[in-house]
Amino acid sequence: MRTIGQVAALAGVTVRTLHHYDEIGLLRPSGRSNGGYRVYADADLERLHRVLSYRELGFSLDQVASILDDPDADTASHLRRQHALVRRRVARLQSMLAHIEKALEAQQMGISLTPDEQFEVFGDNWPGDEYAAEAQERWGDTEAWAQSQRRTSTYTKADWVAVKAEGDTAEAGLAAAMQAGVPASDVRAMDLAEALRQQIDRRFYDCPPGMHRNLADMYLADPRFTAHYDKRAAGLAQYVHDAIHANADRQEAS
Image 1 (tube, rainbow, N blue to C red):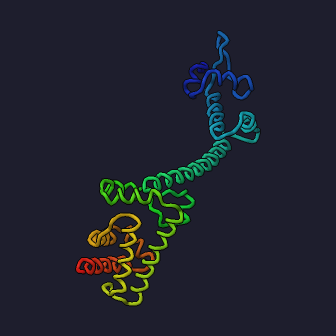
Image 2 (image 1 turned 180 degrees about the horizontal axis):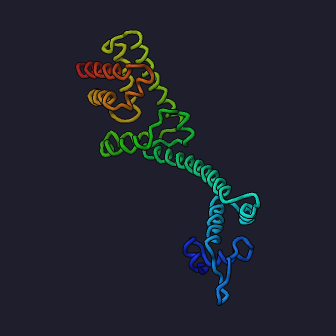
């Protein structure tokens, strides 16, 4: 048997709360000490745990009392009910967490879009928080990163739609050229690669041909970039890499 003070300390509630539960009949102690003080048995602690669990799930005291005093409910029934309710709450919290994380990612990357707008514009191509953190760690102290942050911080949804459309157009053109058998060194492929470079230069940061060549190398070295291009057309990552290299050579020779 435990005193009310001991039970309050174990459960993380106040003595006043336990007094109130006793007064409304929600949790009556099993007995009294010789001095007339409330004392609680293990069964009382088990009921208190259920009370606090249901309260944490948002039930009112009246609802908790009704659930606990249901004559058809036993310990297993309560555990199954609580398990289902907790799983639903966890799912809701995970959804909320995902939205908050997306908002944080967008803020870090200078993208001022709501989560719904991010999905609408980028769909499955939206980078995850791991990529955003990695990008900041790798390039956060570079001028290119600073330029990108300054420029994109003012972009509206319409701006991002235009950015996405520009990139899709150039990538689709490169995929079509590759599938038509156009060599990556052909002027048509190089012009499309140049369109990609100019988009980066115009929309994000200064991107001379040499830097674009380095980016092309990363497209093959990083499987995430390779998967992005090859999802559009098998072998496209290699083709884009070769077209960018050919274009960089052309630009630097002119």
